[in-house]
Image 1 (cartoon, helix red, strand yellow):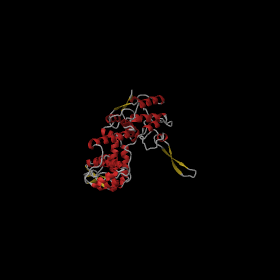
Image 2: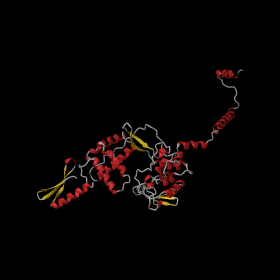
Image 3: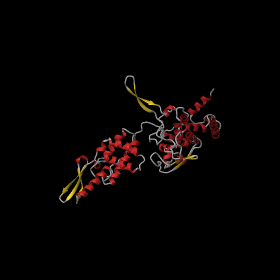
Image 4: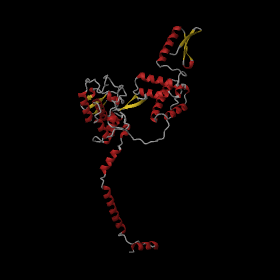
Length: 417
């Protein structure tokens, strides 16, 4: 806690506080000592709560931390944990030690370029957005005259490798996963519902039995409150998801009252952590060899046990639902507007990312469009049509007629026995 002091200056009482780097700031002078003490107490309380910042009294890193603390207390930001994670990278960089009022666009540009060497460009864009929003608030509170971050953009980086447009489970991988004998009943139910409903992780694990209405799931909440879109939506259950929920309801030993979670934590029965993935990933562990050396090992997760070696995340189960609906793998091909409403996207622009076909689907489409023997027949027919076309235009081919004697001689040589 920063200390404050009250001293008497003539007939008035002055309140001073000590801020960063030993600076003394005067809060004002007052007619009575009691009034000065009240002002100092209010200031200290507000300062500890992060509600008071004075110009020249803080650094960029301290201000961003205080700004995130305020957002956390307001409870209006769903991704506050992710914001804190990105802010930690800023706190560890030299930019964090720069006084707030001394920050320049060049400092921001140097910071962003240094981050590009360590993390992906999309992550740097998120870090820049957090810094820009924090500095916007500093401008609003008259701690800065302008935002030096607004004139700086994240530099583009050269693409050095070609990656798949999207990651999702192929049809045979979905079948292999859900038929795997290594899955527990809970895992089988979780993965089936995730794949055939396309729910977000938070929406999936926040489901209650009361949200199941006939063949429809009513999505009312996410992991920390309302769904990401902020709107209630009704998700029609495809047959595999409906069957999985029915089987899980019979197998679960926990309460199935309307307010009970469908997929609670195994031990506590409460809401799972936001990083919970039902054992999807391999779990690292450390062991000691006979020689006394510690080595890292991996306990196979559900994905590995099912024989899926590709880098597929738990969130990619949502992409799996969208991709196969668009491709028509499970029956009729869905329109993008239908997939948008099914997934709960706020804009069709987000759904358009799924408007692609996998390579295997393109091959099957090509095979179904043209038969294997069509090319030879088409080529033969094309040659015959070309010959007929030439005959109709120039008559039956005969000796070359030309005034050029060299061509006459060549034609005569070709017809000679």
